[in-house]
Length: 250
Image (cartoon, rainbow, N blue to C red):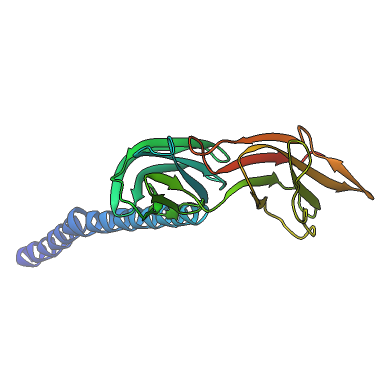
């Protein structure tokens, strides 16, 4: 009888020890694995958000020399996307320059000046890299250094219209005395849900007027703060000038 009682107690003690081992090893291991799964899920979510933000980045970069013979270039960057961007590197041909400049949505910043080695007949191509890993080539025409002077094939005015869905717009550019204007005014069809972007090439430096109208009823109405006066002086500023008109509240 005594031995049977001891045998019963041994069985109970063995069960208690097993349960103790279960609680002190298996369950903590399960909790650690659960925590690792949670961390993994959080990291995947962060990566998905990062990829979405990366896909929404959109910038335009315009490169221009400080003077017609200068060995220094500026890069004007305009954030045309809906998320802020941070510029971390500028490439001019195969030479990189580290920067650290944040630009809000629809904002802009001038980067540089960057010193380059001048070579007669050489083309200078610019690429801008963001913190999220996107790279954007310069929007302005390629710069050439020919016979000790900078040359660019064209000058222009880049118009951004903050769009109201299904709205129709008409954009026209005139020179100062109205002796030159866009060959054909740019007119949207009202099918754009995103902001409107359009570039008009102009023949020479000088002063220009940008006219932006919106179709309201059966009439074309000037957007607020338009027409917009623009001066192109190149080199020294970008060969392509950005202007913004707001069509959302009209």
